[in-house]
Amino acid sequence: MTNSRLDMTMMFAVHDALRRELTHLARITSRTGDDPRRLLAAAVGWELFKGYLHVHHTSEDDKLWPAMRRAVAGRPDDLALLDAMEAEHAVIDPLLAAIDAAVADADSGHERLGGLVDQLTTDLTGHLKHEETDALPLIGATLGEREWTEFGQEHSRRVGPDARGYLPWVLDGMDEERRAAILGRFPEHLRETYARDWRPAFEQISRWG
Ligand SMILES: [Fe+2]
Image (cartoon, rainbow, N blue to C red):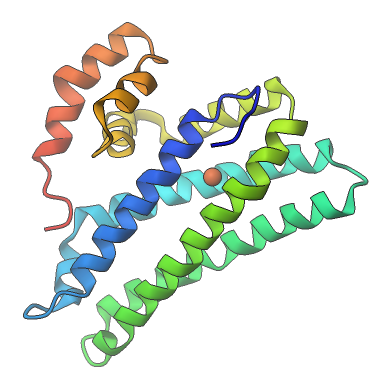
């Protein structure tokens, strides 16, 4: 965790959720005795992962990195770090597309799938670590409260009406203390809706088969 005057609770929670889903992805695509292509094609978890990763990365690309470029203008090392963040994002979408192409390739897709999932895991976990180690401390030290809030609002706007799926997805598998701390930041009616409707509905989904 980084010490910051900005509240980065949700950023770390989303990153942890992405890492959690990568382990599910690796588990089902390394299964023997069944065709991983068939398992992945049917996995709701894969669609959720791609959708929420897209929301997260495009919100950063469109809102966070540009705000940071203004905040660190004239500082080459910091600008180079932001270049690296964007470059690391840019390799992820082609990997997701390559995985989907391997799933759809009935002939030789199975030969590529394991390697592609390994590559995605390496690249995405490496990126998240880099962001947490270097970019988030820089953001904490330089970005204004208003710009950080605007980034969070943009992220929420892109999740939109899917909050009923997104919030339980972020919080899934989290220890109760951390879950309660995150929920404590939301209005009471939303916490109640989460506990009464959203969480039980989410837990009904067998998202990785
Ligand atoms: Fe992030």
